[in-house]
Length: 313
Image (cartoon, rainbow, N blue to C red; front, side):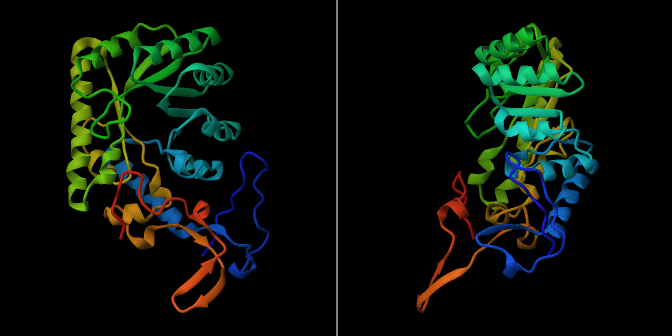
C-alpha cells in the first residue's frame, strides 16, 4: 500500500514523507488512502467522461483536499465543484480558479464568490440558484464587484431537496430572469440524483437514465424558447455510468468515486477492492470473547449508514 500524503489545508503546507513508514509506526486512529486504488478510481471516471463525451467536474466535498483536486485537474477536469465557499477557498489558494459552488448562495456567501471572480479575472466562478431571490443576490454581488458569475439553475429530478421540477413553468421564468440580471451569465441546468441512495441496486440504471433524460428534455425546451444554448450538468457516483451516456449531457459531477464506501458497494456502483480509504485503529482492550475496544469512536468513523437510508451490506 502506498499512502497519499495529505495535510490540513487550513493550517500548514503539504510535507511529503521522506521515506516509507510501516503501518505500526503511525499513531492511530489515522485515515489511510491506498494510492493504487485511488489512481484506478480516478482513471476509471476519466475514461467514462472521455467515452461519453462529457466534461468531468468532480465534486470535491468528498475529499476537501487540494492535493487530490490537483490530481483530478491533471487528469483532465477543467475545475471542481464544492459545497460551500469556505470549502472552495483552499483550492483557490492553490491556484484552482475554476470552481462551481453547487449550492444556493445568499448574503455574504454570494459576496465572497463575486469577490473571487473580481480578483481572479482569468478564472471561472459559478453558483446555482432556484429562486428569484437567489439570482438577485448573486447579481447584486457580481455587479457591485464588477464581475460576472456563471449561473446553473438547480433542477429536482427526485431527491426533493433544492431545485425546481423539470416541467415546472417557473423554470423558464427563472431562466429568463437569469438572462436579464446584470452580472450573471446563464450557463445551464444542474441536478443531483441523490434519491438513488434510497434505491435498490437493480433500480440504479433506471434512475440514472431518467436523471439524464429529464435534464436534457428540460434544457431542450428552454433552448427552443430562445434561452439557450444551455448546458446540462448532473451526477452522483452511482448514476453517472448511465446518466453520462444520455445524449445532450454536458458535464458530470461525481464525488464519492475517489474513495468509495460501503454505500457504493451496496448499490453495486463499486467493488470492495475499489474502496481506497480506510481507517487504521488499534485494539486497546479485549476484555471478553467477542468484544474488542478500539481507540476510535463515532467521530472517527462518521455515520455507518447512508444519509438517505441505503441498506448497507
